[in-house]
Image 1 (tube, rainbow, N blue to C red):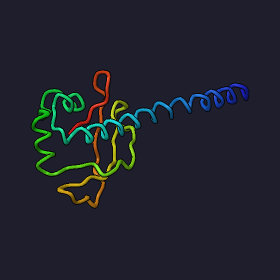
Image 2: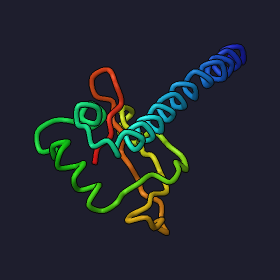
Image 3: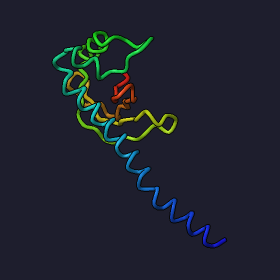
Length: 124
């Protein structure tokens, strides 16, 4: 009986780094998606920005999203952290500092990034 317990504990211990690695790579992908989007935002080019956004029924078009963000002067200051959404393993919540109209918001902003198809896309 003791051998089984030890074997189970060792098995769980060995599998733990794999879980952390997957979680870490998802969080990194979410952060990267937010950074890429805001780097490309000044161009306003939906041929570039569109594939970075979640698409589907009920989701605003890229043009609407870009217009809204530009009207509010939204910009990325820094990414603080990212975590896999506990309700959905294919979604990451990215906490970031943003500016609006050139003034940094006091509270962090939460962005949701979702795996869609073969990439990670920002839901705004």
